[in-house]
Image (tube, rainbow, N blue to C red; front, top):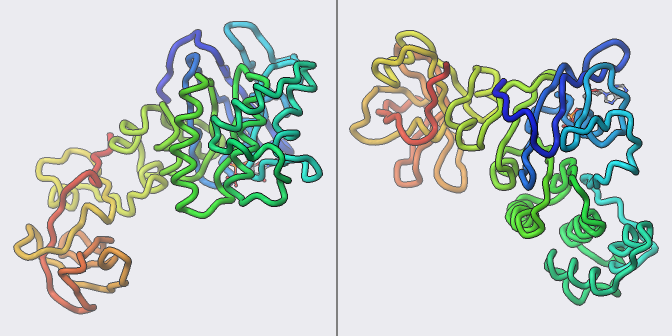
Length: 329
Ligand SMILES: Nc1ncnc2c1ncn2[C@@H]1O[C@H](COP(=O)(O)OP(=O)(O)OP(=O)(O)O)[C@@H](O)[C@H]1O
């Protein structure tokens, strides 16, 4: 695992959480600088939510500690940490208006402020929605209200657990961009859990890939996508094939390590570098997804453009290229 600085805003040090003897979070260490957004990415059941809950103070640690600006807060109760949590289903109060939902943390802090509520509504793109009932809002609007409520009390750290997962893809993409802007504008330090790679890419300054309770790779989104450090991480990041030895060198001449490929890097084209036979072709919006057999390599996933339709059994040639090839260490 790549380690960052020893100080920073948040530091999680050797944190382990066990359920029934099994370590669901296993010796995790990470640091966050002030204003930084860390995306924790990993397959279902890898321990992401449990790690987030441990940071929030909602799980008892079996080992390790949580520090905030070098102060050990492991024993500090949830409500005294000054952190805010936001979940997949924003958990709004259905019997309150939008404005009342957002004002709630301000009332708890005994700092009610209509101006602050109005400012937050504008921030999340819902100016004028204050008197609406939350039950009348769309899923995306409800998540915006939940975000505004999470930010209302000016949390020191925002913890987001799959905040966009319940939304459809288009809305999720739009809100991911908005979320990033809002975190920037409010200079909020945040830890963000997701299993969606696009979301992690769009929102995070740095991503940490969690597999089986352990942080396996940390870096900027570009670093992690370009250079996954193991076949397991590569597969999780959408590389469908990992080739070794001579097969790897057919794709990348001179390669000394295994080479991982995304379908987008295996393109059926005229005059390509390698011969292949189409095993299967499935139409997609922008052409076809194809399964190919390549002598000396075996079967690979690839793509064919709409201008180059192919059918099963057809002999074609293939070009390897683009961003979808990574040489593993
Ligand atoms: N309170 C609990 N008691 C026992 N086991 C638990 C508890 N909470 C979580 N687990 C188990 O710990 C493992 C990790 O769960 P966790 O929710 O942290 O994973 P995740 O990576 O967030 O998954 P997902 O993406 O599906 O939400 C799972 O196997 C889960 O069943």
